[in-house]
Length: 384
Image (cartoon, rainbow, N blue to C red):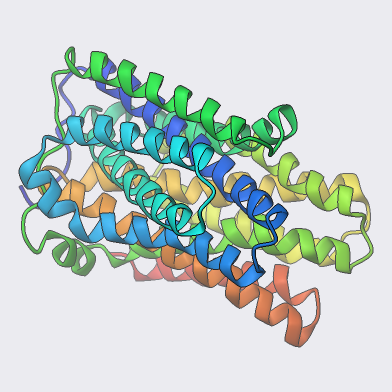
């Protein structure tokens, strides 16, 4: 089925929605732990920084591969089974990271981890929208986004609790992800819906039909990675302590998770495109105001508002995707959004970092703010 308004008269498939939220939370926890922990472990083994960066990049290559192959995968395996297999694959990759030290094995494991995570991400978005009536779509998308935020925030907590030695944190997370896979498999037997297969050429068809949805997630990816990876450096360079720089990321994570159900409620009560434009403007002006602020508590409050508003762009995109697309194009759209986030996050880290090197520290928040402002204007005046 091609682009269309979603049917609103059916009851939500709560078993499918529960399985999807559990799965994406586990995927987010795995990604949230793997990025910092893998870097710390490799650094302790005297691995050069260039190889550490390449190893982290192999995760992104895995996600890109999953995006390009999702059509073939859905043609051979049912979507709900792909999510369970993706979770089991993530668990196996984490166990490999816990048990082996050879660098080439870590490269293969990180690539496969990204591939499995990409499959979970794409199929979860598609199944969530297939299982949800349009009257509840915003609120369910908000809960889904909150679960993802919580997973990203909770994953790194395993590092101070269990340390970086002996791979225990990787092993513990592997067990957790395997348990979630088991629960998802049980829940999938009680579901009434399934994500459809993605037909040939559907990704290009979706991209031609909904470029602004892809731009929305690209803008979110740009702001998200700029906030996490570049803004802590900005804070240190402008005279704040390293402890404050680390606290800024933590202070952003929890309010972002708590805000998504509220954003979902607004999406179900107000004009969804208007909510998206409003979130883009709030995130943009929050970024732009940071160089003008001196009080650290005020900076943290504005930073938290920025994080909640920028992540809301993803919640808006997910809701609009399900509102207008069904069937195979829903899976293709999820794949495009996954790829858009990967591109946006790459641009966010590199562009703001380069701007800060060339133009000074303030170029990082100003550049991210201007990018979000440009998107908000484009979406407000460019959509049909």
